[in-house]
Length: 165
Image (cartoon, helix red, strand yellow):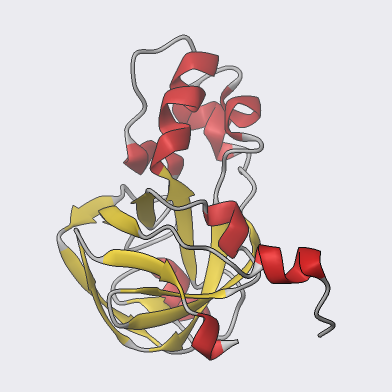
């Protein structure tokens, strides 16, 4: 990797976020079950989530920005949107997830690596109603793979980990 001023800037993330919500879907299309804490395994993801059975994919863990929920709600002409309706695993606040989309970061003691954006699926129309897909576009969060296992719990810190680059 080169070390231009812009690249140094993109690897400088002083904010520390917070894990606000955790959701597990035991099967594809199953209801999301909110939990207070969950074990996260290398190579698979969150124990009990159907994505964890998929193995070595880039979508082992899905994260969404809490600050984007009011935007999505506004675009849908609603007062609020429940995080479970967006079908992501983790709701994070206080740190820009888009900045982490290709970087290593920690939630508690778990090390994740952002693998890219997590675009909405067509189910957003089914779950959120007409316009649901477009309301989530650009606000769908990121996907990550698990590098170091552990447990995450609501309230855990979310931070960039430059030592793991």
